[in-house]
Length: 186
Image 1 (cartoon, one colour):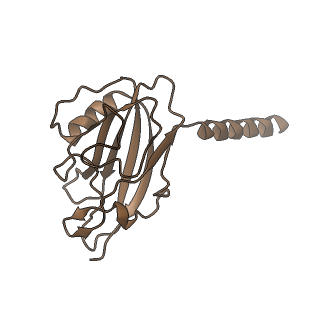
Image 2: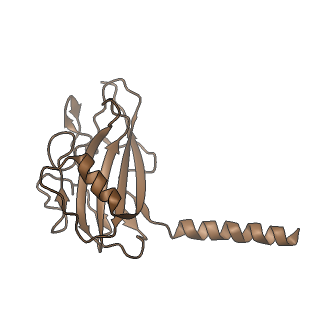
Image 3: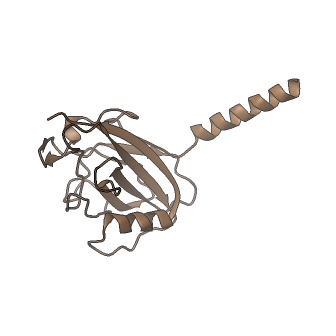
């Protein structure tokens, strides 16, 4: 019985330690499963937000990480199953551990040199904040940072978010996610 108890404690400690050192994504602007503030909501399509991308931070990327990518997706968007891409960013240097609030400006001026923002489902590069249909249940906005095994993804200009996602996933070592929610009544 004592052996079983020691094994259970050792296993619990191992799990606690592994999660404490796991690749993690967070934001001072969005708590886990928290509501996304109007500041980050899209301005257009009937939404009246400020369309400012939230600040994001990540830590404990795996060994061998050569660059990062960030994809933000709404799987609840009524698009026939494809969801909606809100931000598509790649070629983030390996030494980067955060993006400041507003980094998703279309001109990319708050992003590190060499970072690429690809066109979202709004039809332009840069952050496109939440803007679900009026009356829908709150949608989930899944922010995923990917640790990549390559320094740079060679993706053609004007590529779709789906092509970027394919290339990102083909080169991923690990990923970390943060999910926020947003819904609107009018």
